[in-house]
Length: 111
Image (cartoon, rainbow, N blue to C red; front, side, top):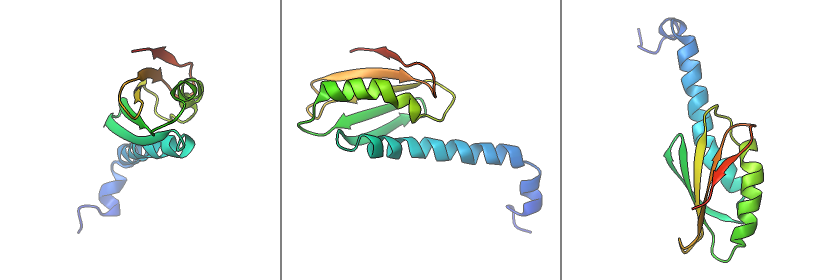
């Protein structure tokens, strides 16, 4: 019988289900960020499940993005842990950092 038979999966359904859900959220957040702020964000790089690097498009209003991002990013997060976002302009000359958690207040720091 195959290692992935329903009998084998039936012994650990909770763990498998939790890992699948976690993987879906982990992979979904970069796409959600680019969909929500596509006009501003060129690239989202996942450094870990707790840290993301965002590179902005050339010519955007970086200060406006910072205000919008700080106000709204927690609405996109589905994971229960703090996530650190390091956001850089296209030239890597300006940046800001936001620490956020799902549906909680945003903790932030400026670099």
